[in-house]
Amino acid sequence: MDPRTRLERQARPESMLVNMGPSHPAMHGTMRIMLELDAERIVNAECEIGYLHRGFEKTCENRTWFNLLIYTDRLNYVSPLINNLGYAMTMEKMLGLAVPERAQLIRVLMSELSRVSDHLTSLAAMAMENGAFTVFLYMMKAREFLWDVIEQTAGARMTTSYIRIGGVRADLRPGWRTSLATAVGETRRVLKDVAGLLDKNSIFIGRTRGVGAISKDDALSYGWTGPCLRSTGIAYDVRKAHPYLVYDRLDFEVPVGECGDSYDRYSVRMREMEQSLRILEQVAALIPDAAPLPAGPAIEPGEAIRRSRRARAAGPIRLSPNLEGSEKERLAGLTAGDGRAGVPPKEDAYTTMEGLIAHFLFFMNGKGIRPPKGDVYFSVEGGNGEVGFYIVSDGTDRPYRLHLRAPCFHIVSALDELIKGRLVADVVPTFGSLNMIGGELDR
Image (tube, rainbow, N blue to C red):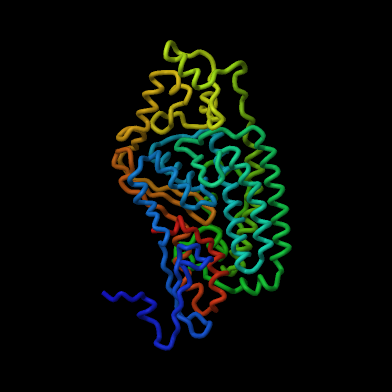
């Protein structure tokens, strides 16, 4: 077998071969682009992925349906809540679960916060790679306000595992409306500042307009979705084409570009963030305030366990700060209430034998979630495009087969063609405009 790469076999003897990555900082340590050069002109290119060596799909096939949720966080670590959502809704389709409306609204809220965070991070890196470091700082500042809202509810900024099969883990934290209003206002100010810095900047336009362009037909043939596809002029958005949750009740537009070049990919993401901020304001108005919990003294979990050894503990139990928002009284509006998919309420596990047994059974090997035999596919609109899960169940407590339809994989597969004929200096700005995420890309 010839050990040489395709590029090495096809290269002309007089050409110079250069490796860009995986140690190049713009390649994130997970990509290698081999270039065949004629001076600074790129004659041919070949991309090699997979330096992350994560093996998401095979790892998930060796975890239970519930325990593999945390691995979805690590796919796109900038918008993990959307990854959680895609997997959870695939399982709900397989199990036939109906999610309460409050949980659906919260899911939309969290998804759009994640989408704006994803676009901010992507454009910040792209601008920095074009020399606009101030834009990077502005956008990171806005992202902090958005992540504050996420952290207050999910308890984490990146590895959230907040969306659960059948609903969400906990209710929104008191005071979330104030935090959200601050985040939306600060993000709008940053978007205005960034547009002032970049939209008519001759250096930025010179490095992005007409660079890395792709036609509609080619983008479709590569399987592009998300803002990269929309930059070519195709208005495909999973939220509009196949509405899920409550998106069909919300008013928002799908921005599109004209040329499919790096500038259009920047412009589409900027306008999509404005639409997501509109969605956040609409959905916040639709979420009713949480009903107050019963007044009166409550006992700590440790005391409840001690009392339950003699008799069933009476009265409400004060859950720890980590479990705030997931009280038994709130779960009816947050989860499907189906014993096949949800963890039993902590109050029951602390104080009753039935609750304790149900808790153990949920996490025991061979027990827990066991969907019927069959296969199912479901997808949601992620920060970078269509995030889909294809799952095959053999009726046991873990997947027989799990396949991820990651948007980044299809987009990066066209990078060879995007940079052919361009200069070496165009590689990093073009690559940055695609929003490559190593966790998704890895195979």
